[in-house]
Image: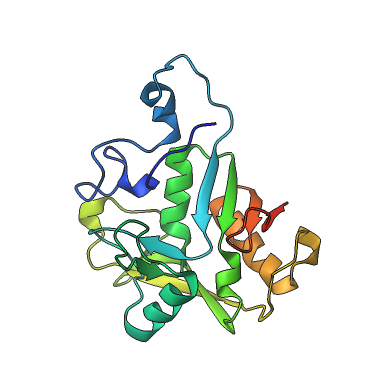
Length: 205
């Protein structure tokens, strides 16, 4: 098993350059990066949070400011592990995530921190970007990102503590609807769902 650091958007070639790492965290680079270039990778698990976060500079469509962003940041404890720096926050972004899944060649997804959203009455999800009258579901090139705003679709919250749930069938119907919507938007199955920070707080779908 090989695990990359950082996310797809920080890839030096396909990310939001120049706001990137100097290397490639993409799955296709893994055989070269680990010194085993003939390795064939046939399974890639893309890891996405149930909401959006960003570390560092650069465009971040849908970034939540002030009280709304602070609330989600505190619920998710979104601070840098090494620096303690507050992470930038958004609701789940299907546009950038779909692009990330594509360039990673993800065959399955792991959706993490679903429990963080359990107190919300309604949960917005970014399903498109708009600039004036122009609306797109495709992630634009970095220089074109300025001026875009998020287009949201809102889902009903489940308002239920997920602690102790280990089977997908036992999740609230609203949580399952949220998961299914993300699967359909990203056209990739969500196989793993985390509902807490402990190792055993994982649902295998």
